[in-house]
Image (cartoon, rainbow, N blue to C red):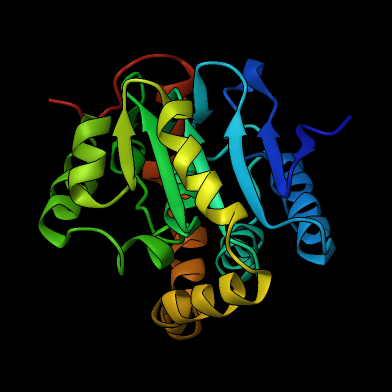
Length: 244
């Protein structure tokens, strides 16, 4: 069964991450299903834009430690979102952690409700936010990113908007989303495609330059002894051995 549900209304395709029992973690299956759904949206002439959202109280908890995607597959998915000839809009009403933040960074627009929370938790399990940095580093405030990358602290939707992780945050995500979708529906397909191409050119340069190195870094870190201890501690709900 697919873990990505699809719907369509007036030019907007909605892709819903639908594995709430796994907190929509980025498993090999979820990454593959989302890539397939995005491919179909890209080919569909009736689709003006794509909304990426979720079921449950978590947009995505990051990499599925029990069934992780290969770093190459995650790179390909992030690049697919950036390169899709239709705008991709994230709608977040819950928690986002680690690799899930890469999805937000790859999207063209992201809206969040006040219930949303965010954290780059990679350092706490002995790895680094390597692959997801491809769309994030060129788009976020560098000083804020240094803090949250290095500490793994949780921050709220207002802070996510301040640092550029989300476009706008509000009490209700759908209220914030409504004028965005209205604007996209009023825009021409050609205008949207070419404008997106302008906006993403610098991000794609980062992919071209750094993807291979960051993929190798991710693979090396995830196979390390510290990462094994960090992931085991996470699954066992205990502090890792280095916690003081």
